Amino acid sequence: MRVLLVDDEEEFVTTLAERMALRGIEADAATSGLEAVGMAERVRYDAVVLDLKMAGLGGLETLERIRGARPEIPCIILTGHSGEEEYLQGRDAGALFHLMKPVDIEVLIGKLREACGLPRGGAPGAGPAPLQGKGEGGGFGPAAGRAGTRRGHARCGGGGASGAT
Image (cartoon, rainbow, N blue to C red):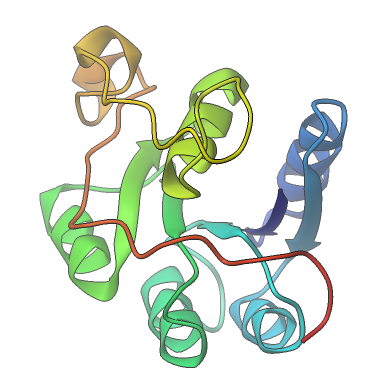
C-alpha cells in the first residue's frame, strides 16, 4: 500500500511516515496542500491522509483538488481541530473517514486498509473490514477517546498500483 500523508507539522508527518514504514506501508509526506496536490497528480497513491488546519492551502481545499484530479483515491481526514461542521464539509468533499489526533496507529492503518478494500490484517482481495463499535473507531471527537472516526459516504475505490502514472 502506498499512502500520501499531508500535514503542515513536519515532525508529525515524517514520524507518522516512519511508523507506517515499520509496518510495511510505503508513505510519502507532504508538508503543504500545494505540495500534496502536485504529488497526487504525479504518483498513483492507494490512499491520502490529510490534516484540515494547514497554513496556505487548507485541508478541505487540498482534499477537493486531489479528488478533482484523482477521484478514485480514498481520503481520510486526520486532524486535531474539528467539529461537526468540518466533519460535514470533509464528508461532502469526499473523505471516507474523519479521525481525531492523537490516533492509535493501528486504528489509522485499519481505516486505511478498509478504505483500500483490504482486510484489517489479511491479504488483498478479501474485502473491507466491517466498522467497529465506538470503542474502536465508531464514535467522533474527544468523547470517543480521541480515536474516534465517522464514516463518510460510500467508498470511492482503491487508488491502484504504486508508482508514477
